[in-house]
Amino acid sequence: MSAALLICAILVFSLIFWIGLYLISRDPANMRLWAASLGPLCYALGIGCAITNNFIPAMGICLQLCLVLTFLALLWTGLTFYLLPYGRSLRSQTAIANKRALTILAVALPLAMLAIALLLLHPGWLPLMAIQLPGGCILLVAGIALSILDAQEKGEALLPDLFRSFDYSCFTALLFGGQVALIMLLSTGVTAAMLILLMMVIVSSIFVQTFSDHLITFVDKIAFANFPWLQKARAELRTTANTLQRVQELDLDNLDEAEFIRFTRRALSQFGDLARLATNPLTRLSLVETCLLKHGNKDDALERAIELKAILAASIERLKPREQGDFGTSDEWRYYNVLYFPYIAGLKPYSRRAQNVQHDTTAKAALEWFRTYVPERTFYNWQNAATRLIAQDLKARKS
Image 1 (cartoon, rainbow, N blue to C red):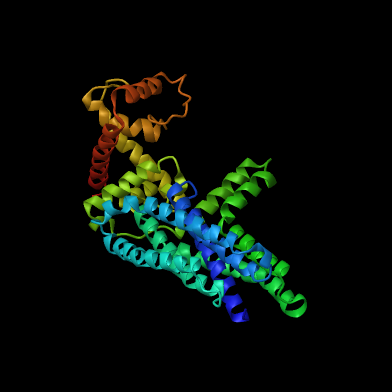
Image 2: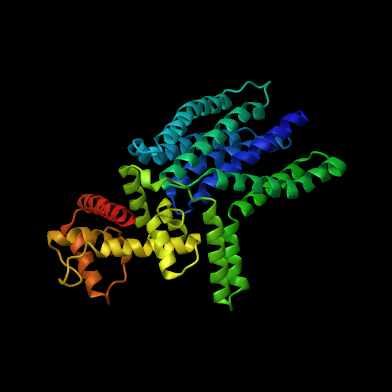
C-alpha cells in the first residue's frame, strides 16, 4: 500500500467522521440529525477498519462487509426519515437553497450507493481503500447538503458555523495527530498499533472540538460547583458567542407571509430554549429593538431572545378571552389554549410520560380537556391557525 493512498484514506476518514459529528452537534436533541449522521460515522469506521486490515490481516473482510451493510441500512433509513419535512417548504424564499441542496443529495446518494456496492464486489487486485475514497467524498458532500437543509429549515446561517467547526477540527487534529505521525516518521514506522493510535487521537480531537461547548458546560459544573453565578455567567457568554455565528440576516420587512409564519412557529417551539430562540431571525425585528431601547437593555443575542419571548407571550395573551377566567373550553378559547399551555405552561398533551400538574388545577383541567376532547390532528390544525394570528399580530406591531 502506497504512502499517498494511506494519507488520503486517513484524510477522508477524518473528514467523514467530522461531518457526522457536526450534524449531531447542530442540534443534539434532533433525532433526524442523529439518524442522518449514523451513515457517515459508520462509513468512517469502515475506512478505519480497511486501514488497519492491511496491517492486521486476521481481522478479515467480514468485519468490513458488516460495517458496509450496516451503513447502507442506516444511510437509507436515516436520510429518508430526515428529508420528510422539506418538501413542504419549497415555496418559501429559501426554496432556491433548498432545491440546490436537494439536487445535490439526489445526485450524491445514488453515487454513494454505487460506490458502496463496488465495495462488496471489489476485485482483489485493487486496494479496498481505493474504492472507499470516492464514496467517502460523496458522503461528505451529502453531509454538507443536509447541513444546508437543516440551517434553512431553522432560519439559521450555515457558513460561519460550518467553517468554524471545520477549521477548529482541522487545527486540533493536526496539532495532536501530527505528533503521532511525527513519531511514526522518525522512529517506529507505520505499524498497526501506531495507526490505531493516530486514528484514536484524530477521533478524540474532532470529538472534543465539535462538542466543546457541552464538555465545557459539564466541566464548569464540577469546577464551579460552589459558584453557581459563575456557571450561569459563563454559560450566557458561550450562548451569546455561539449564537452570533448562526444568526441569519434577513430582510424581515420584505419576507413573504409563508416564511414569516414559519419563523413564528419555530420561535414558539423554541419558547423554552433561549439558546435556540436567539438564532431565530425574528430576534432582528424592529419591535425587538424598540423593546431593548425602552427597557434600557444591552443589544446582544440573549437579550434579543428574552425580548422576543416577552413579545410572543404578550401576543398569546391577546388571544385570551377577557374577563372569563384562566381556562375555558368554548371555541373562543381554542387558539389561546393550544399556544399557552404547550409553549408557556409547558404541557405536552399527547406525551405518554407522566406530567407533574397535580397542584395546578388549571393545567390539570387543560391537560384533561386536550386528551379527552381534542384529537391530536385537530390540535395541530388549531396551532397552525393560531400561529398565523400571532404572525399577523407581530407584523402589525412592527409596522
